[in-house]
Amino acid sequence: LTFSVSEQLSGYFQFRSYWDWGTNNYGDTDTYAFEGDRNNEIYLRQAYIDWLIPNTDVKVRMGRQNIALPALADGKNIVMWSKDPTDGITVSAPVTDWMTVNAFWARHAREADKVQITRKSNNIDVFGLAADMAFEGFKVTPFVAYAAVGDGMDLGGWTNNNKPVKGKSSVYWAGITGAMTYFDPFTVKASFVYGDRNFTSDNTAAYVGQPSQHGYFMEGSVSYKTAYGTPELLAFYGSGDSDDAQYAYQGSIPSVGGRFKGSYAFFNGSGLLDNEIENNHNGNGAWGVRLAWNGLSFIEDLSHDFAVVYAQGTNDSENAARFGLNPSWYMTTDDSIVELDFGTTYKIYKNLTAYLEAAYVFEDFETGADHARLGSYDDAWKIALLFQYKF
Image 1 (cartoon, rainbow, N blue to C red):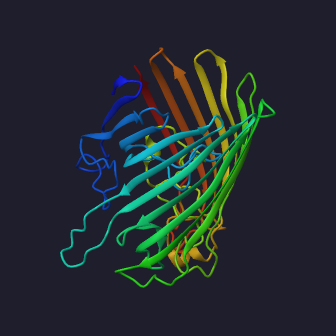
Image 2: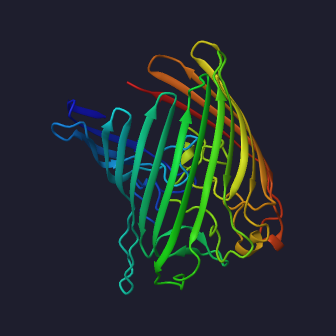
Image 3: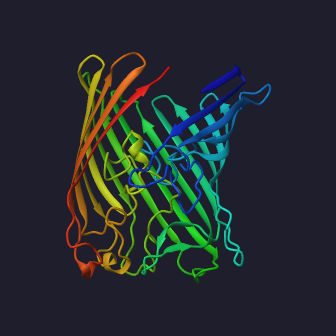
């Protein structure tokens, strides 16, 4: 619901009804109270106000909202993406006719410690800055971010006894993403981002002084727009752990709710609500290629997307036994998948659209107790259907 007073001031509210299948309760009772958590049958998902600073073109948004770092070549960002809304402030300021500066603060997670003796900070505050620069035939966006992580929070690191690496820490990211359309109908996109997490104190284990969690992610794509859709080739690479890593994800880029639009099922590429499932792989510690044909259409208001994806882990194969993590989260060089995706969009009426997504994942994972894995893994598949009414 949008409440607009003028071009300079408006408000927005979004409500959602949510049910966690397989439980007896509505919503999510997650250990961490991430902003936007779904802990009621009907809950307020977003609530913010938009306003312009008087006599300027500077836009300010305050409240619970979707906050993310700039989209990379795949369409999302592995570091931070708007999976669930967060409380925060975003500012967008045009500097010249070719550059706009965007900044934000987000309380990505917050929870008061329930233990009376030991006090911990279960908060994550993220600050970001990006500069959108557009020129004739290409766009480029450099960005930086900083996160202050509380003692009781983890960012994906795991010890060899399958416990999360929690601890007060400082995290830094720097990246750049861009697209070139100068040779239209060809479009070329490329992205690179690096992150480093340094532990500053810890009330539960001695991680201070250990190697930082640091890594990088890069990707690029080439597409060609035709009258019958757009074929696209995407390649990506995320750094992984070596055989001497002291904890899992030590060699991967830190992430605060980041997403990777690599495929409908195994990765976070779904455009429907099931993209909020936490078990999807976010591209960390993996490389792969995707060949797709998007927007194939022979009938008005009906279009289809097809894709085939191959991905393999970049973590050392010995780490499967050392850390014992599920291959859907932690892929080694001996783990790989092939995924087939199919999507359909049907515009039934002006305000009503139906979306269908189907995927099948052929899995080739390390198995057996000697790798701390199951004896076998079945192939995975999914079908998702969404009807969207806009008015």
